[in-house]
Amino acid sequence: MSRKRKYNKPFDLCHSILFNDFPAEYTSTIGVPGKFVKKINRRVHLKDGTTGEMDSAYIADPDYEILFERAAVALGHQTKPVGDSKLAMVGNYDIQLVVDEHLPTLMAFASHLNDAGSKLELVRTPSDIIKLYFLDLGEQNISERLSNVSKKIINEDNLTTEDALNLGVIVLYSPRNRACEITEEVVNLYLKIVNHLNMDMEYVLYSVISILLDAYYDDENEYRRIKNMLDNKTSSDSKGRFASHECTIESLKYAEEDLKFTMEKLDAANVELDVANEKLDAANVELDVANEKLDAANVELDVANEKLDAANVELDSVNHELDSVNHELDSVNHELDSVNHELDVVNQELAEANKKIAILEAENASLNGQLNGK
Image 1 (cartoon, rainbow, N blue to C red):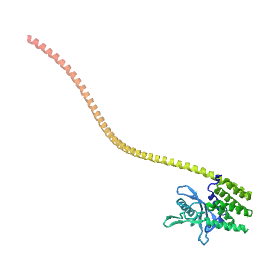
Image 2 (spheres, rainbow, N blue to C red):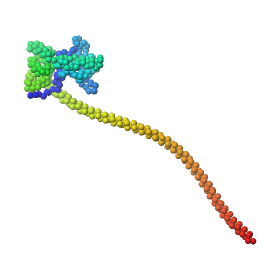
Image 3 (cartoon, rainbow, N blue to C red):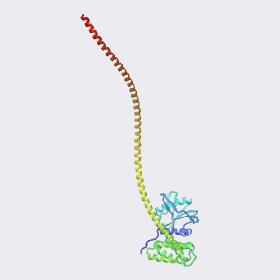
């Protein structure tokens, strides 16, 4: 019967649990150069304005074998070969660590695979080259670890923290073709020592094994058989602590899904916004052209208005001259009227004189007739 998995990114999750609870022992156990000092910021600010996260980040002091000065370390767990996209992200990790810590950096990756298919060098400039420090925790390494810790447990030797933590490392970095077989062997070793573990180590090993059981086992019955073996010997405190952590993991899973959905909607909205901005830019270009035409028309209108103003000035001058001429004509007409009036008076007087002359002529004719008759 096939199983539905419970955990998202189980290998990264287990890497985080091992590092968060036992950072010095975990980094030493898997062979990262240097000596753990303290955890530091994992958040990375990317060029596109978004953020990412390193699997783990910390300060390491020198071991004077491989690391010769204090460094900022980015430690990642890798389940597949390092490709171009991951290598580019390493460049972002490097920049962030330098900005935050002002220290040289070490980019380390641990994997159950060897480095044959991975790209291990990022050349950003001729003098800025990042070389990955690759930790090959492949089948041979895991077999040696399993053999060594098995002997100590069978011989009832005192186990160091690193020895106990190796059980989690072995399960996490198991070759995938033997993962179920190795995990069951580790569970049986865990059951032999669980009563001697402190609560923190019991919780960490129980958590890592539980999560990886879910990742490795396809068959529900086999998964349940091994999980019951694990649960029956583990304290209720560790199981309760893990159950609480499990709820947090589930919440984070849904939060991650919600965030992914929100980001998809945001991306779609950004696409629409880009289209709208392109249209707005085109409209602004058209508006600029229209404004240029309007400015040109306004210039022409200003020139026309200037010409019209000049014409109006000339017209006002002509009108003023016409008013002067009309005024002079009015004066002349007034004088003519006076002359005409005087002429009328003279004519009237002439008419009166003519009448008197006619009368006198008639009287004269009459007198002449009378004189001639005598």
